Image 1 (cartoon, helix red, strand yellow):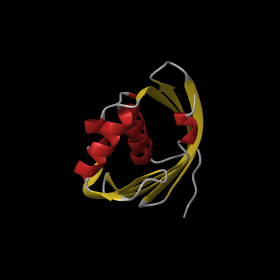
Image 2 (cartoon, helix red, strand yellow):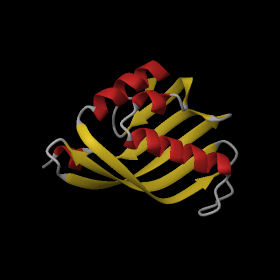
Image 3 (cartoon, helix red, strand yellow):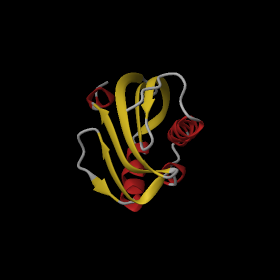
Image 4 (tube, one colour):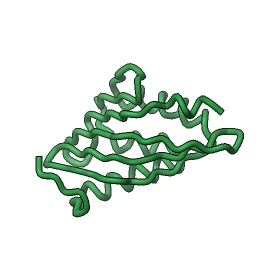
Length: 129
């Protein structure tokens, strides 16, 4: 894998920006539009789910538990079909309190969409006030 931490391709930069924009707007519809119809998706230690409709349901439910979120990209690597990025996300809970959690995303691409999406994160701190 050719590693490019700062000089990402336009495709990868645009994809990360689109993911972040959808997430930060709590817009599940825009988020799943970035995925293939038969996407494989895992958020943290949740079971692997298959299909855009299942991801939409999961993400809609997750977004309903928070007031907002903000991403901070730290590093990213890519090759022709894989994007890996290390980042932090600051969640705003329903009570207005915030927690920042580190995570890593691994995306397998098919053309301009994500066909396999894994989010390696421990969401336990989000549930503790």
